Image (cartoon, rainbow, N blue to C red):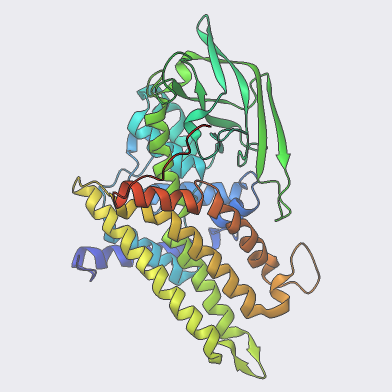
Length: 403
């Protein structure tokens, strides 16, 4: 791929730069990262900014117009130009999260026309936040063994069971959820993928306090929760296929190279502006070497994502390339957080309103949060097993024989 701007792409780059100059006063201070770290409803300013980005094609660019998106044809270089120019201007990019990054592409692939019309536009505009009902107390890594069940009652399902580690369930008005609707089918065939309101009677949410100080995860309990059968996405009993589409998009979200690049840019500013004995931290050879190493890894991630997108446009399966994204992305982000903390010294470990804290303690909070993401969405160990068995065709680990 030739990464140099053609005449068309140079014109597009100038359009992006003009937009950023003309609308810089409307940009919010919050970014998608701050809302992921401390889940809360989007402010009106953030929603207005997101809607503007969608209208101009700088967010949700390839979502079809009939569902509220910009409707542009895929163009990897234009996506890169958008990211690069927003980085250069230090402006917040479009929102991402469980609704925008995971549910929307799943609905585009598996949803009915009614479901697409109802949910995609308000989701990409930030009007609706979503949570994901997947993991259960006894069904984490082996997700297909989930026990939350639904029985038919007239035109509805009655759902009973529980979920755990449900991010944003305490604030999200909607959920996409896996439930077992076919008790006599195999564990992979008996699951349905449903979307419904968190205000439905019979749902109880219990926040789980984490070491970041924010209850980003939750337990969710369902007791005779009545959901219409029209809430099923992709067909009754076919939820495992739909769920894997969502998991694919989740891995992409958790390994977002542009999000890593944004952190790298912030660290570069720290190393330029912070000094020891009058010398900027970039003069410290150890910190500089660590920065350069991570800079090369982030650039490798960005180029790798572009390669995967190119393959997807050509109709080629991603294969092993897709599998390594989540594993490396989460680990690189954790290393970036550690570098920022080390660069700030003892001040880097402060957070939660302490008077001498810098950058609102964001790096310490990210360091703890990203440690969790190495586990969430499939642990690093699970990802390595997937890479070995499905990507490298290595033999599966022998199963223990029951005594």
